[in-house]
Image (tube, rainbow, N blue to C red):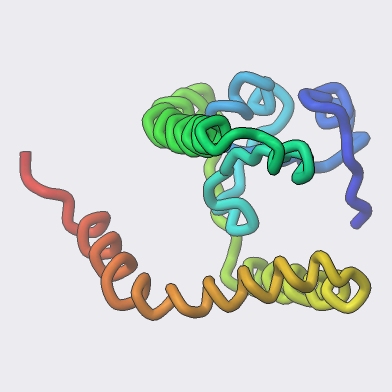
Length: 172
């Protein structure tokens, strides 16, 4: 397998077989890009990006020169944009996926074996990047420490609640 980065919406490469598969972010965007016109199958889940988030990058030295009120405004705007984006996709993805399926797209799920192999490869890459980049290592170490610390809470409460609710929809 050879991974290629293509320009957004390069359906011709998918339609002609130049590439075998494509990935963007979610049903809303992939429907808008027309992936369903070039591919019959939609594989899920996207564990490497279960939910896209927005980022803002600002030159630190310029940011530090700003008055505190401006810094707060930037932080509030970034937070609000991220929350709104997530809420919008949460609200629209179900309808987009239904339209894809109604149009003939077949949803398939990656096997646990494929998911485990992808996870292993990802964490091997993170290890390599950590070894070669002090900046990556700093961020990765802090992220992993935080992730590990919240796992117990999510397994104790969040996962169990979601598992129950999704397997036992309330009567209407």
